[in-house]
Image (tube, rainbow, N blue to C red; front, side, top):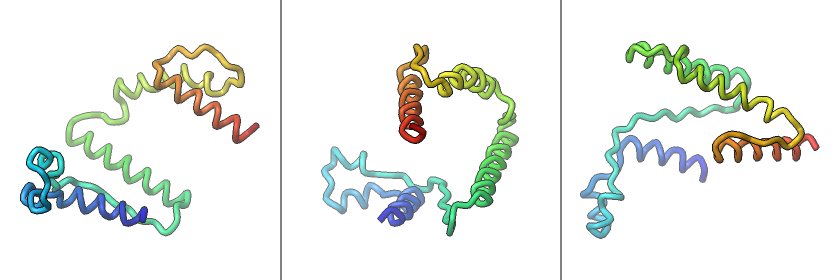
Length: 128
């Protein structure tokens, strides 16, 4: 069932659903715009027999190349942007909060604080 849903998502992105198809299903007019999908959306479905370290490395390399190529086309240095620098600075503040065993006052937004707390709980469950 999971694989069928993966393949169906690829098909939906590729072909969508026209307003005519939606109306032919008897969909009420007010709902038809919400059930219409344009299609012609690019996507990639990658099937692997096994997810091995080598296969994962190849996937990472493929996506890094894709990001680099898109950045070159758009004249963006994808691996040296201010956003990357900001992310690294924020990560430097988060790392000690992930590594500490003691409960400390978290000073991030509620979403980040929740992620840190959840990570700590899962780490405690795994490692006692």
